[in-house]
Length: 280
Image (cartoon, rainbow, N blue to C red; front, side):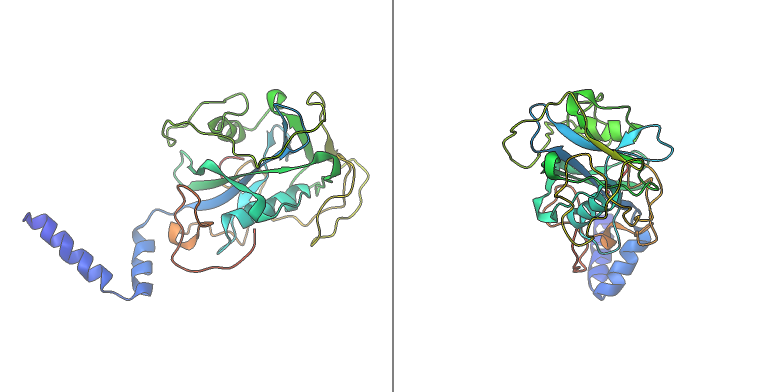
């Protein structure tokens, strides 16, 4: 047997003989460190094909992005996506109603950010949009075939799923493959895709209940300021970190949602409810 293989086998035996906490500590010391986030791509369930998606305009307002942000420590990705969606737009979606993208995890070119991508759908006519005027300036529905000027991380991420001006373009970190936009199933009913519904800080406001669904008002109506997640402006988890984010932690610190393709979770069990990356 090759001497190097023997040495390697002995090293693995010694490593797996260590207590679990010590193995985790060693793994975190030698493993790459990532910021892990979640991005939500939300479709208007009432819009006719090709449909509309929810976009956000953030300071300094030079481009539009998607609801996204860094996961809190121990937060499940789908839970974080739903949380960021509500904090930034007032749209309430249950984590279980979000569908993981294919691919679900996007490792971005800088090597320090992993985004988990989630798809959902809500009826725009009964879903109230609400922005805080600080982190997010405006929320609006746009036809998929007539998107506004996008931030470059947003254009790149949407392109992976065949959406937007860079549809079909894959970054080097994504292998070639038939990727799709797995929006939850639903029959479109009406609503023209030639117009957009929006809310901005210049609109009249009313206050949504933090623990209740942000609905019941006409599409485009505004609500009072929502608490900001504390993230910096941007279109991705990389651009939007918070004090609760697990910045600089290893993949072992970030449990997956349980079945998200391409996303490795921790051994540590976590609890929580709803979870964004370089792709907003």
